[in-house]
Image (cartoon, rainbow, N blue to C red; front, side, top):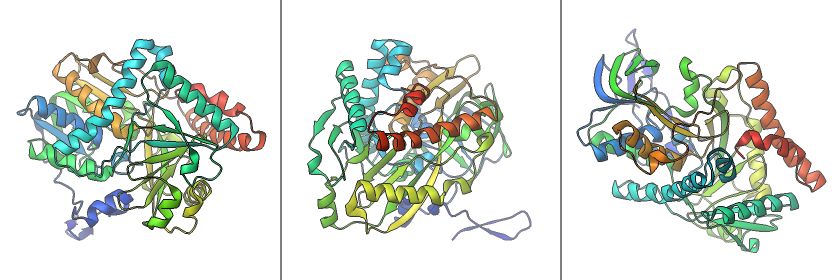
Length: 468
């Protein structure tokens, strides 16, 4: 293991980045040593300074370089590229947007809602196309999502989703026979073809190498301390740029000026050992497919390229003052909940050994509506608020931000999320009380529906606050 010298000359072990997630562990196993790139070494002048080395920042750099190969780009990353949600997520490259089509219609009108939905659907294919063009093998297979309805209340939610898709005419959702799958208690199932399974760390690490090879410079171990018009301040120097792009997602909460813009809410995951073919025959999920159900306390899973199940969900609490710490990534109670939820949903996994557990914060805007914006007078842009639906949305954000920064008017810059202001989260302790009440309400809603068999009153009360 490479080591770095401390200020006293002693050797300090490198941070074990491969322990962050299954995905980073796999890329390390395949030869990526995850060694941090050199930090910023003094003041710098560039055309564009991107704060955050995740998918939003890297896709922005990619599309800027596509349009202007000579553009000077600096990317500042506190840890390593892909350290945050981009290297930890569930691997769903989906057309999901945190605000529903109905909510978008209420805010922006039906034409804008349809345009947003179509842009998200097209983005799934764009991720696959761009990855193939760049030679990034990220296990991209567009197999769609299977969502199981396992109670009468869940069936009502499934029918509402089908009705909404038909009304807007954008999402080609269909019902399929749940008997094809080994999902316990499944009464019906909905299939959405607009989703691909991929290995997120392979994508983000490959994209970092690609933009670097084309001239962008990634400074790792370089945390932004503050930003202002055309300027980003770090402990290693100040970067002056015509455009500053903030692409920190949940880590926006670590900067004073964006502290209340996005709430860092933790989502956790587990992964099983590779499962034998006989077990997969019983489960029925195919390669490239993702899966979940219609419970309120969200779960999500995928069949990985090496035949594991990567399975995640909500349930971890929000931490006071939007704190983000490594030890919040691992909550034994939530990991056990995920183990039980997986075995309950897919009984064929009951003997499967869990080999990896991990988690991390996602960024939640006050109205659950993602945004991309650029203020030409200050030269500062912001993108984020994906609420866990970022694996594809980051690509759309990167394409849109590239157009905004370069002043190009396009169909993307006319989408309704451009310039959207979600407002700020309440000060503490209201933020702490409200966020954790919402998490508890979702768990209560699932329990309520199991007991009553009717749609949850708790869920109905919270739905307007969660982008629906």
